[in-house]
Image (cartoon, rainbow, N blue to C red; front, side, top):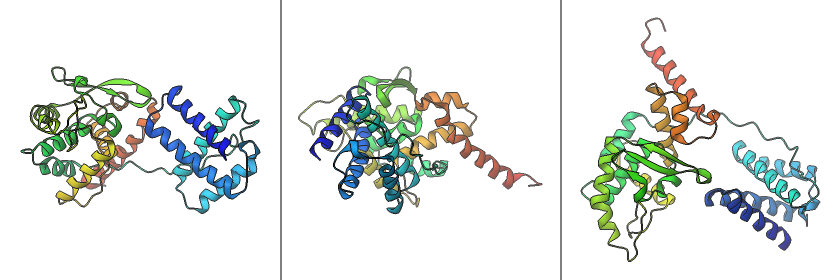
Length: 300
């Protein structure tokens, strides 16, 4: 399988350099393709060019038997379709066996968001008299105020923040940049952290970094670090909820739409390329409107 590994590495390099995909996305592609390579080994298929449409269907069946979620299966098939499209373009294979494999229908789940009371519990739990507490407060306030992705949050540099205009230059997927506004609560939390907590954390490191958010060692915080921070904060509240960084993004969009923001504005703030991606939040707001109606209308 040495040749297969070389082809995989060539494809991943293409995604990074030509397609400008993020490191996280490239790793996801690699994991999906590796599962397929393991399947080929189990089926004693020696070459990528030997794979037929029947083999592709067999792989799909295998994923179903292993009880992968429909969304996960769809992503894997989409990944392999792109992989073979690249191999065909580079003339490593003669055809794309995944070209005609239909994707499983996506499960339509409304995004989980936090209610205002749940957000307030998080805002109150940070000990802002400590450097770590100031940092955590700034993270929570900023992610709710802007709806940015966790990858975008850890990539923010000090120079990206304009306090006079109350905007942040955010670098999103495929290095697309956008300016996102933030409110007074986030402004106060950020200024407190930058002027106090961050200076203290930076002293723990021998190097200098322009990264906004630092870990306890004084180096740049990672996406995994933010997830761990949120887990700890939730445990300190009385709320029995599971929080992911992406839920702040869902909450940001849902609360804006609930308060009357138009869909196009929310799309631009979130950095969505297509309006259809943003429209998922309209289902959430419709459910809320229906619940309000049923609870308050005299004739409901």
